[in-house]
Image (cartoon, rainbow, N blue to C red; front, side, top):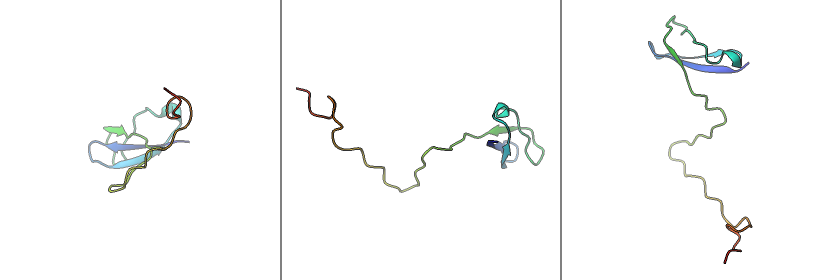
Length: 73
């Protein structure tokens, strides 16, 4: 069962709940009892870059074909 992360707008507490995907948009109640919560964006599978890290190098070399292979006149 997927786990979803929520944040309470009243107290700022972040919490998780496991629920079926069909109920992913259903409201969640903060463990402190507040009803004003928002579901946070899921970042699973998204690459994160730590601060100060160098960017990944650009791909190099021609892969063949007309663009990058040098066959255009």
